[in-house]
Length: 307
Picture 1 (cartoon, helix red, strand yellow):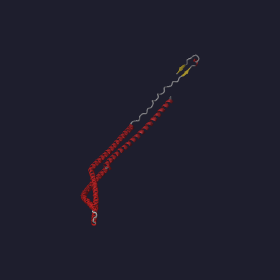
Picture 2 (tube, one colour):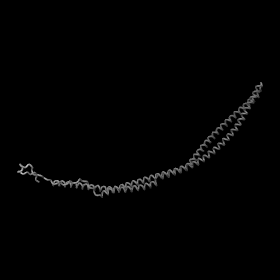
Picture 3 (cartoon, one colour):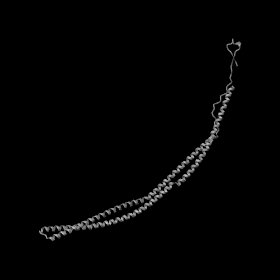
Picture 4 (cartoon, one colour):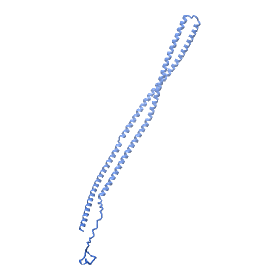
């Protein structure tokens, strides 16, 4: 019985030591969790401060960003381009006036050339009429010559000289007519080229005028597009900063919740480990012994039981 009690006591002492070691380990773990929670809270506070500073820096950089400066530079470039287009349009207008003046001068020269050609045509008609008259006269003279058997030598020489003069006159008139045709063709070509230049200048002036009308519209559209783009970029930056702050707040709330749980776990008493119930003490042992008297060993069949 004493051996069983000693075994039970030793088991209880071992269980107590095990419970003490588990309690110390749990307390050490609680201290580590509290330290980690404090470190986490300090990091969360630093993160929130850094995010707030970054948000302010982001807003200031957005206000003074290169996008706005680029938009201003583009607007200035558009204004300069519009001024250049206006100057080019003015120059084209002046050039168009000069070309129209040249066209009027060429048209006047062409009309004068056509009038001169009409005069030359009249002269040509008269010359041809004179040539035909001379030819008919020559034919008549030849007929007369054939009719006369023996023409005089002096009349023959006179008719030959007359024929030569008429031929020379016809050749001179033909050369003058050819020269007049060449001059008229050159004038017509110059007039056609001047008219083509005037047409090109007119079309270019119309394009410049159209471009001049479109420049203010394009400038206004560019300003609106730049403003809308800047507004969209600013709104996106604000949304990103707001989301970053929300994530930081959520992270801080989670860390604070973890810190609260760790603090609550550190302040609660350690939970008792479940142990099986102790066994009941053993009942007293009854030891039985059979005692048979010597005198009854031979006569008695049933031995008596003595306690």
